[in-house]
Image 1 (tube, chains in turn orange, blue, brown, green):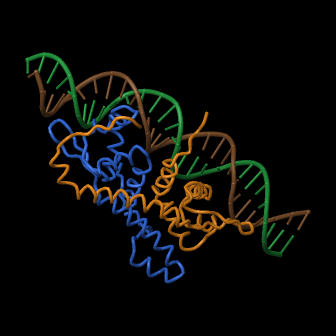
Image 2 (cartoon, protein in one colour):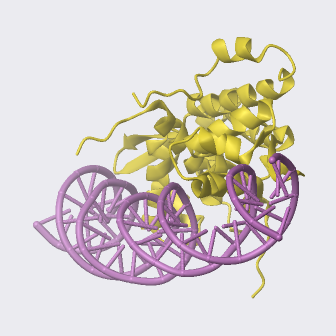
Image 3 (cartoon, chains in turn red, green, purple, brown):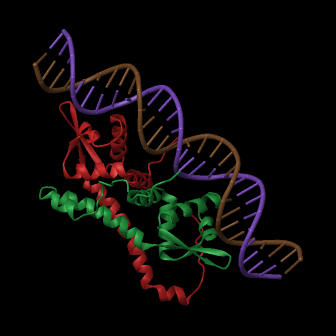
Length: 119
Length: 119
DNA sequence: CTCATATACAACCATTTGATTGTAGGTTAC
DNA sequence: GTAACCTACAATCAAATGGTTGTATATGAG
């Protein structure tokens, strides 16, 4: 069975990765300074393996990257992916602003437009 | 059983709500123009109840609001919450940009991303 | 070489999620 | 009033999540 790798899957992963306080905290820390997985793990009240899983979720979303250094893996933040998410949200906000501009048009022609086809 | 409502829960809900392509599509649609739940439901290849649940997730995250109009519920986008998420991500990017400089200054005036005392 | 450290990963379990169907209540149209 | 429509919500179920412990592997220190 073919599994499609769509754009939304990428976006899904980014937002899902950010939907957890521990993972957001990891992002904040490593975006400022690379840190080993075990250094990170010391900070949280959960097992090393649990933190490792959180790091893996962030890695799958490309919010962080790992760089091997000796026997350690240094976790670095990836601002490009953060930027991608920010831009998407800004786009949503733009849709709102555009809507506010054309509010009079919407009110004047009170028609329900059905767009058939996709999805 | 008492369930605490911490600040990060709010952020969790926002990002979790955005971590699904159907829900993001709903946001895009209603941010431009309010639509009834059933109008939205027509667009997606799933049951009405499923769409209703997606709307409920977005509502819990305050990304949308519902306004009763006759027998319909009109779903509207809430740009304030979108803005909240955007600002948070921008803060993360800022941390990256200024990581070489005085990081403590940034943290002191900022987001209180962590150190949540589980209020 | 030996030992402690750092990471990876599998197996397991409880809870949550995402979807379904079915039922019920409220509102509009006829 | 009756019928059709819109929404809400409960029950159910498979799959995913988030945590655990245990085991394996690789690297660095002595």
